Length: 304
Image (cartoon, rainbow, N blue to C red; front, side):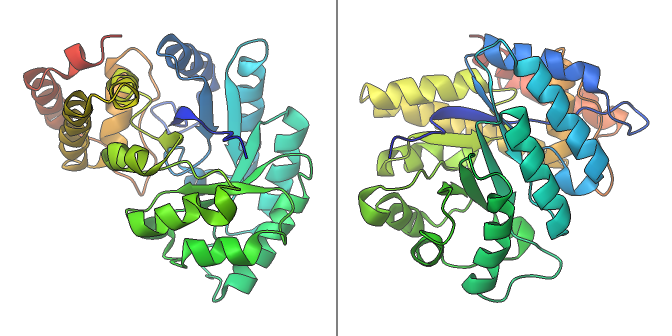
């Protein structure tokens, strides 16, 4: 199939006021920022979007706002609809189709975990059936869900049972499994990669697209990485990938999500704090973070 999620797909933050309530006015700024950096597809309400910290009503409101902002632009919206409550996921999937989402995706239930591929496929099949005209992606991120099935085996089991299955959002460092998924039925499905710090390795194995959080605030690094890889300049591509590693390492040391949202604020896109149970940088940590970013030339790296 032709890959649907090609190039960079930004896993968007959900914007909050300082009191933790939704600040939907910022969505327009997020969209403009992405388009200014040639990122034309956004993945909303996922891990970066703190979906498990949002109510159903908040997720519906968020999807509605992104659809309104994207209308009339070249921005395409993918909606994550997964939930520990299957009924909520079904509701979100139906809404996403009504809003014209280019695709939907769903994590595995992660509190009561599916104990077999059959159970996982049944759950995902019910979600996908609520949006029968919309491509469906399974969002595999075992480090967060604790659901760790073989993805090649999942494809073999689910392909045909979920008619709208378009592929997997593969957020996993198992590059052997990734290759098997890419080559499933001669490339029948779309397997965008989800680990920003390994993007070059995934491209070398055949990835066509990538979904990631750091594409919100560091897209130029990855755009240059893509371009260098495509022209065969591996030295340049490695340099950009290492910049990604340094950046992600720096943010992770103080709590990745809160630090990443702080970087967006530094760039003039005030997405606000992360909700508990995620932490946010202290005032002292923010000063130190900016200093570290300046020392590594981050603000020069992200000049388009």
